Image 1 (cartoon, helix red, strand yellow):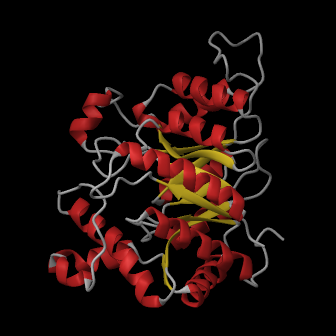
Image 2 (cartoon, helix red, strand yellow; image 1 turned 60 degrees about the vertical axis):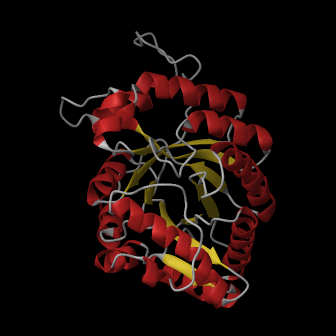
Length: 335
């Protein structure tokens, strides 16, 4: 069975609050652990009225404390927003508190708008130092040595596993060069998916962390009791994506019937393309669509996302998705 994981942005729905969303994330993580999910990742976004996971490392600690076996990590930490040493100290602390359960996925984008990026006060005037920052961060997790003049404490010697995240070929090239596992953001930016995966696999260089390529495919899932309910649940994400792309981000909208009647006709095509890596519908449809995506791209692992307005429906969607992943007859790509 191919491993399957869960990506959570701790969505804030219309009519809800950040406090509700954070409680829901803890509940969903416990539910995912019981369903056999391999990892529970949280994503860093800032100045987003519909996302409560801005202080990602803090929330990772709360989720890890509320669970016992599932791996918990970031999908991802936006490294340009942070000094590598501070990331190493935060995740070194997490790894010390929760040994062998913490993942650190890294992204290159700021995860916000430029005004907020300026408020974060990191590297706005310089060039792209992302590859150098990744190398610096990796060194902080290495074994202690006399040559170290700056140590992450906690952090040094923890060997926190790093992941490279991306939605373009840049992340694929860097992940392959450094010998890191690679997760592609196909759940919202699938355009370069096939090209990036081919580059990653064909140019991968083994490292101390990883001896062969390991690719994680991100898929949206909106699973209901039947196809109509699945499409209805997806309408919240379709509206949210359209709002974001037209400069009107906000809380996660309530679902609607006939969602295209509620969208600006100029963005309907863009929304369809952006969310094309999605399994939606009732249990049979979701299983078939997941099977088709996994069969075509042969990932080593799948990570499922799904922003659904009603928390109980979201729990149920990931339950149906878990059943579908377990039912897939496709052999593990690593075998």
